[in-house]
Every structure is written in structure tokens, then in C-alpha cells.
Length: 66
Image (cartoon, rainbow, N blue to C red; front, side, top):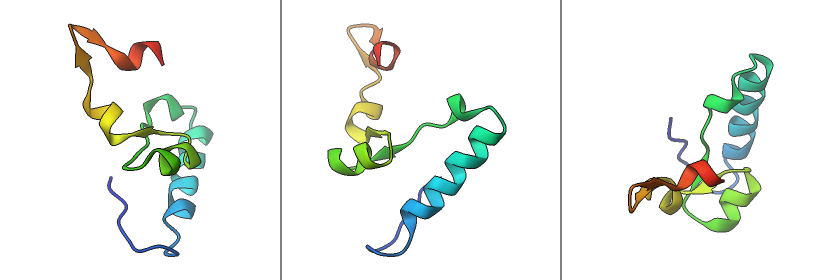
């Protein structure tokens, strides 16, 4: 799912609601949250799209160590 919109359009609230729904179903480990900027990724407790897109370097999955 991609959530698009200008600032102040409640994207964070939508993401918070989705996260809570995953947590209530005990499947939040299936949810991967990403944002373009590091600050935005930090605020949603996610990763940057750059990190998500760099899944394999020299045969190692970088997400395993996070």
C-alpha cells in the first residue's frame, strides 16, 4: 500500500491505524513501513526506501541484521 498526499492530510494517522490493526491481529511482523526521508522513516518507526531497496549486498540480506 502506498499512502500519498500533501502535508497535513493525516497520512501518519492512517499508518498508525493500520499498524494498530496489524498489532491487534498479532501479525505486525508482516508489516514493513518505509518512507523516502530518514526523518520520516524514524517518525513511523520504519526504514528508508533506500534501505528497503538494497536487500542484497554481496549475497547478504541487510534486513536480517536490523
